[in-house]
Image (cartoon, one colour):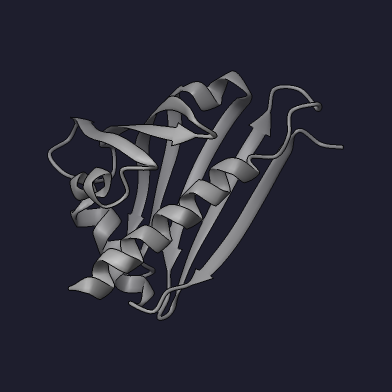
Length: 147
């Protein structure tokens, strides 16, 4: 069994995928208010907004525990409606040597991809983290449908 892996999950969104992308690209700072059970805090450390090279951090809840993650935004493709974050610091790096999260959005679909390298073979795949991303997407979808 290899140490590198990739998990991909897509979820249908009634509000359309493009508004989900725009929310993560433009209105990221509102996410803790929309999904406080998952995200406690969002901060931009470098860069004015969510742009390539910006460094951002999140405080989040995972299985009842408070967690922290700091990421650099590696890519934003407005035409393909995708954003790529690479983890540079945080709890997830205790288990994984590398951890990259990719959001891509289509007409009615939002897809999350996690590319990772486990530190040891006995570490499980990051299914909990993938589930959190899907739950977060549904929380944002509910918020957008209320408008």
